Image 1: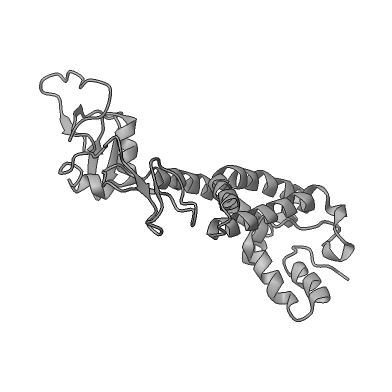
Image 2: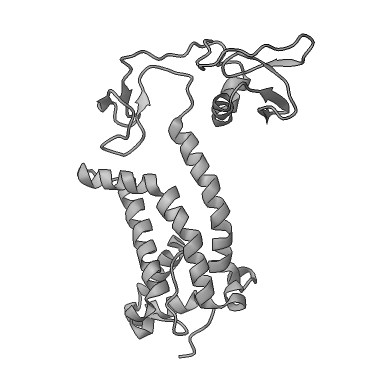
Length: 263
């Protein structure tokens, strides 16, 4: 396989322990502080961060040796298509105007999916913020009334700080594709996701900073509860209000409040 980096192989002193980079095939010096990754009990070493990132995106492909048996296909006239809508053909990568899925190259390549790499990074960073967020919003259900310990207003501010990076950064691709679906007049799952996330986030902002805008019967202990917790609250409220819209909504909201409405 051709080496696609712009640096030359370093001179390695004789007798030094070496290893072969599974991504580009370059011989690299094994160092304790060098770039490396473990997979299925074996340690692999890399010449650069780029090769290490490619390996982590699809370790089986490189560790199995399949990458070494293929030459990278990079024709100048490569085209991209949608796996779900093959009639969509583009000269550059992007999203399908019908379903919003990422377009795939029509010529096989050993390059890992950039979308998968990006989404994986966003997922792990979001998970780190989501864990304390879930504890704040739903901890009472498992015997952790954190909101009672620190105060409801403080908890709401913390929820806002934790949820905002998830919504505005991690979910940014969802909003972009949701907007594209509207522009292309082709509603799809990205439309639903972006509308649901956006509506819950906007409601939560008003509930956190302007609770007085909401009717008295929608409030709990004089504070309107933000919905940063997500779709679980929305779904449960919907089920509870089917039979009795007015009183049912109030009771459903109270069920999620750490401080029960004495009314």
